[in-house]
Structure formats: structure tokens, C-alpha cells
Length: 84
Image (cartoon, rainbow, N blue to C red; front, top):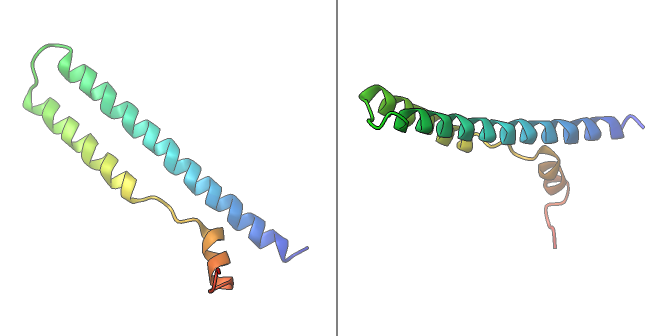
């Protein structure tokens, strides 16, 4: 029974990390869309608006590169080096 607990905990943490990552994607997309609507609503695009849009887009792309790895899948591959 104690052998199952670390495995279940690592699977839970893996799902939690992926869930937080997907939630972050939705937040970043909301922020970019909100900034875009606010920037283009007055008809002109100022340098501050442009800087804010580029900054939000940069952080969104950086967030995409921070995708977590699946811990339980890596353990299965390590335990079985020849999957065929």
C-alpha cells in the first residue's frame, strides 16, 4: 500500500502542474485580448499600448515554453526502456 502512495501523489502533481499551465494559457489569452480591445477601442495605437501588447505577447510565448513534463510517463519509460 505504501508503494502506491508515491505513485498516486506524483500522478496527482503531474495533473496539477498541467492544469495550472492550461489555466495560465487561458489567463494570458484573456489578457492579450483585453489589452488589444482596450488599445484599439479609441482608434489610435500609442507607443505605450504597443509596448504593453508586445510585453503580454512575449510573456505568453515564454509561458508556452514552460510546459511541464509528465512525471508518471517518464517513470514508466525509465522502468521499461524497450517499449516494443
